[in-house]
Length: 501
Image 1 (cartoon, rainbow, N blue to C red):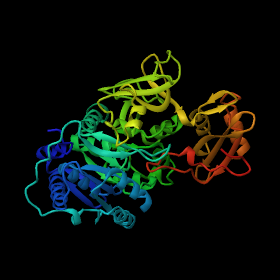
Image 2: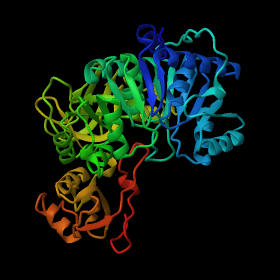
Image 3: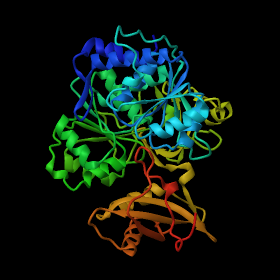
Image 4: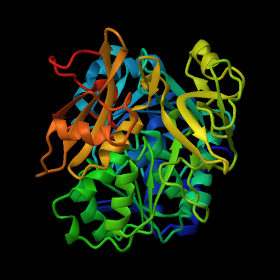
């Protein structure tokens, strides 16, 4: 039995009366979670959903998300999660590309989802946030999980499409299952006594695997926050005695800079996990010092289910590093021709292992390009040290080439994060007639803090080589972010007087 949803049935058998999901005052035990997921499976079957059919989900982090997700898997369907901020035209693309049979949404995404479904010619079902009653069949015996093979697709996750149209990464039952188990057993070391903070979007693979699926395997409680806010997160940690917090770097920063941060009891936290993008070392140090907990940084992608490497508990932790490969996964650094680079050299991370996607949905050419030899090319550049710890230097596509010299934006950002007034930084390249590209930085300051542009430029200049420091610095209220809160360098607007990309 390979169906990922079997984990829910097994956990309910063992820990049925324990809390599984919470969202403020609403909650479900594992018995209740299993029962309502079973009713969703029955409801989907009644609507004609067959094993292998795709079911779209446009839901934020509300109780209905895990219930619909596991219900669809129990029915043997393939889940296509989508960001609830998408517009009708974007949802239409995902529904058409995946060939979805049905789409499920919650307000306020119901209108664009219904509009997209009507254009495509499929049903849209609007459900409540606390319980997807509109999709549930009658209460009764919980159906067995529909049998699925290891290599059957469980989830199609669309990658953010930094180049061209988004592509659907096909994640299998076996790949997602093994990644959740490795996360639960070797990284989180989660148990039924843990309370995991669910503020990472569940429609994104980091939240889906590391919060929801790993939590279900462990029998832990997942406490959900539909829309992340630093102060709200602090109050939920205190209220629910959260033991495991998982976030992207901007979430750690938001909690650190929350005006009332010292009013909350954070003593229940035993572990914090950062992923999604590089956590500035200064933010990590401040967070650990302020809240008295350990932050472990890991690395992964949609295509790798997602976790590929991690600063493992009980091993040396290296701040600024993404750690070592997890169980069942191999990493290596290669050049443009796929050859392993010399020790100490920068190369592109290539990944092989049980976490790897089956391929991009109906895109054999893109799949062959991404996995030419069994090793997935990530597009991330890194170094590996003598202990086997990997450190990302940057995205291959975001590296700045200034007068023939490679400048890695992350290094400049790290330098600026050391300035006491700086909250967020994005370093980008702008066009330059002689040098090709010039280094530039957009900076958002901490609430109430002040700093002059010249001061920030000089601050960076004192910390990095002369060819690297940003010649252009400008202040912004905030930086553009993706669905997980990751700062999007490519979306930073360059002021007219500075130049253009």
